Image 1 (cartoon, rainbow, N blue to C red):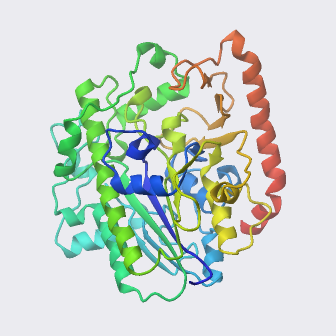
Image 2 (image 1 turned 45 degrees about the horizontal axis):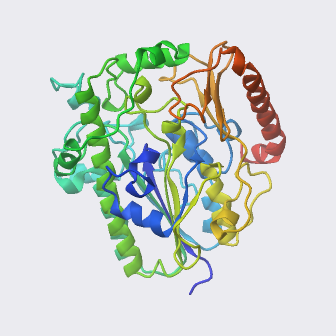
Image 3 (image 1 turned 180 degrees about the vertical axis):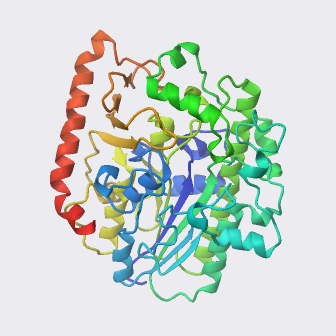
Amino acid sequence: MQEKPNIIFIITDQQRFDTIAALGNAHMDTPHMDRLVREGVSFDNCFITAASCAPARASLFTGYYPHTTGIYKNADSWKRSWIEQFAEAGYRCVNVGKMHSYPYHTPLGFHERYVVENKDRYLEERFYFDEWDKALKARGLVKQQRELYRKRSDYQEALGAFDWELPEDMHPDFFVGDTATWWLDAYPKTEPLFLQIGFPGPHPPYDPIPRYTEPYLKKDLPLMEVTQEELDGLPEPLKGLRKHNHEVDHDSVVLDLEPSREQRHRQRAYYLANVTMIDEKIGEILNALEKHGYLENGIVVFCSDHGDCLTDHGHSQKWTMYDLITRVPMVVWAPGRFEGGRSIEGLCQHMDIGPALMEIAGLEVSKSLEAQSLLPALKGEPWTPREFVYAEQIKDAILTDTEFMSMIRSRDWKLVHFLGMDCGQLFNLCEDPDETNNLWDHPEALEIRRRLLDQLLEWHIDSQVKTHDWASEWR
């Protein structure tokens, strides 16, 4: 057995925590994700650092919060990561699919990149054609894309849910899964492997192959009730976000401000069908890894980058700080290395898996990291969960009505702060786990609001001090 373990890092895009059957969601069909949960270690209170793709992923692969990396939104420049340390230590570092670095082809430490980024757009910024674009062109196919969806008579009410009508193997999630198994079958196994596989789904457009959708359309799917009282109590920036997502069709989704239950159920069925499609490809990847001996000394990490409201709370996609967005599945599967079948309930940040992997591989972990290693928890040793987790999001082309949004969450409370504004969100998670009763202005909650705001300030100051040397070196 080689000394350094093979590390396979599988990331989905925009997958909610409540989409895996083994995590208590009986309506899901996810046998391969279920296997990872049953035989692995599941971190059931894992929280991302930002409510959108690039800043969350940059934190994951650097170990620092967005305000430290300076990567606040998609298309902010992101060119460095701790993957470079794995490459320097003799790993073969390969990316198949989505990473969301910018520029998209930036090495980040990878020796090989097979980038897939452009799900519903014909061209991305600066005319970047990814591997999927090239494959579609070689087959003489035109991508299903926003410009074409807009011509449909049902576009306004579809909530981003459309049937995949091209050949099945050209669906982006099948393309990424098949490319990963092709690479594993083709590459001669020599060095230890760091393989990142980034599935584009279930990020919208919600475009599964119809045979996967049909079973979900027949199921009674859980939908959160959205009341007028909750909508009236939203802070002004989130009211503005609803209005914006109704008027602008990001990722081929038009938010209906008063969707019917039928519209919501159909959207949810399409989204969940896409999860099942990804699950099937994960099974094929696990088989290929086993066939080529990568699992004899291997660690598989499975997670997502953030969730999706799917009209719960009256919102579309991400850009909010509800647990539906900030809490993600994260499972570490390493039979023979870590005792499986365990759920870890303590709070952790998504990025905390990074230093654990570096320690396992014998790499140096910088003392300036804001990520805190999960290795003791993986080993079943005494481990101190985080008292608080944090997330942040800057004003961009979508979150238009606030300059900056920050979240602090403990086990029992959550606060969302909008820079320079009197409004905010405050939830008692013990009494209100669905986060529908905003206590921001309630007199009885003013003391906890003050304490959480003070802690948010303390976090920012501590972060600046701890990361000063790293920030100077990398910028």
